Length: 166
Image (cartoon, rainbow, N blue to C red; front, side):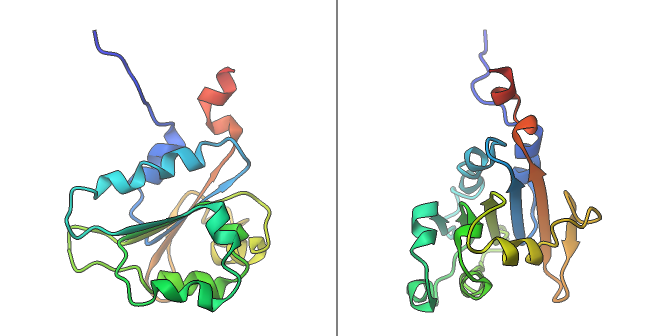
């Protein structure tokens, strides 16, 4: 008899299957955002060329100026995950890290995945960057002016059946 150990929610499946260059999963707490980001690196982990960086809330809150992200300058990162992106105070710091996102291996799609709640020092720039509030872009992949893709997924506790059961 097989036992189901782990079954992602529909919003977690949406996030894990998105190939957008920049992916933001936003909304209230308990939507399952953090849990799903732990599985994203597993998609490419078998590739020898895969490199990733996971920034948790404590790391982000220490990034106050460009010198704090300069240590990543020149790196080739395939995947960057920001946990609580709105804690990052400026879009400039985000873009500096975004510049390290690339892969020489065509089998690896470079991706920036970020989660956020609706608060934090950088909430305004995060919401502006992903055009949060524009229902035409919510839960859809869309193209930016420079041709890259963004995807904003809205989630809340109602989207997490494991929380709702309890």
